[in-house]
Image (tube, rainbow, N blue to C red; front, side, top):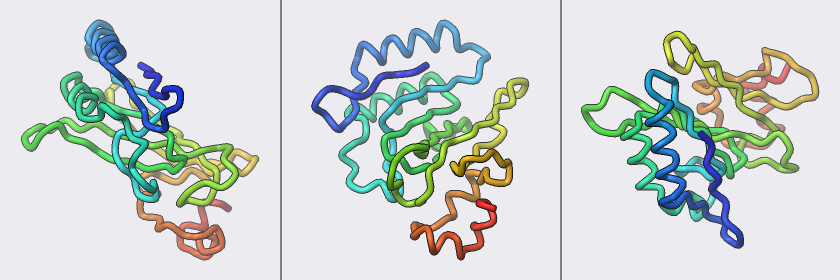
Length: 175
């Protein structure tokens, strides 16, 4: 399910009661025994290198509760132009986690943090209804599977310049 979060003249995102109710109805009606994915432009959680956190969803608490109540498996967000991954649990005793992926940007002139244009590649095991893996794919003009950085490796990369990245142990992903 995709939700439109931008509003005219606002940098923050808003979902609002109507879209929240529609999302709940769609997942309740069609989401039983399915891998549930929620997509939105703005990010839900603060992410490293994101700067001031004035751009998250205004009604983020209600949306996180909705994600927990509906057992949504994956949330894809953007807005920060910096890939990141988080896992969220709806409670101390809950064994169910929601993966929250913030996407990179394939077109921005000067991306934040990770100084390369990128996008996410997501593998879902439909039979098991699980996220098999998530990758950050560096945009270089050619397709190479070696240029897909597994998200669990990507989150270890420190904020640095392009030059420093090319000298780091992670540089082999660009070859």
